[in-house]
Image 1 (cartoon, one colour):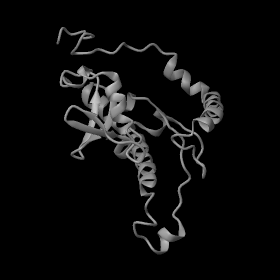
Image 2 (tube, rainbow, N blue to C red; image 1 turned 135 degrees about the vertical axis):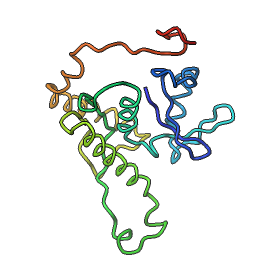
Image 3 (cartoon, rainbow, N blue to C red; image 1 turned 60 degrees about the horizontal axis):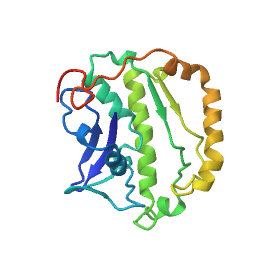
Image 4 (cartoon, helix red, strand yellow; image 1 turned 90 degrees about the horizontal axis):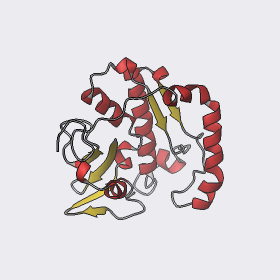
Amino acid sequence: MNIPAFDGFNEVNVLKTPHHPDFRLDWQEELVTVALATSAAPTFFSTYRNGTRHFADGGVWANNPVMVVLVDAMSCFNVDRHKIDILSLGCGDQDLRMTDGQIKRGGMFHWRTIIESAMHLQSQNALGQAGLLIGRDRMLRLTSAPTLEPIALDDFTRASAELPQQAKRLVEENAERLETFFDAPRASAAFYHGPLSTSGGT
């Protein structure tokens, strides 16, 4: 598991399970700490303080973490990149377009929502890079269609009314490909450190 965040020094952080001998630190963190660190969306919430460190949502730099996990898989395991399959789940895409003010004037006022475009473009770039490395046919991306009226992060009423049906439609439309991810037996994860260690490490 690879969970992106960033800290008070504006450095990227990837919180990892101990699935490689080099990953010795993060397994000691509680799951709730990791969840709070990676979900502290800075445009909504304050940073999450963990000891002397302050964490914010990794979606700022890895809104789509597909390249984070692909690089991890290729660097940690002796696996041919052309034999990697990726299932990528999105949270819905906003149909972003430049406004008249952005095109003709620029400036902080007209570009105050640049973070939305930055995260959208990061996702596009990550998918493109991953597709080039493993082959686009080996990657399945599931997300709802772009819309001009995205569901707000705190709009539970609309999310609970619309998202289950969208998820059901995506599963039905991609049922055959999804079977290849879930029907084949998979080897269990091996951990090198902590109480779940399978290698005798501590």
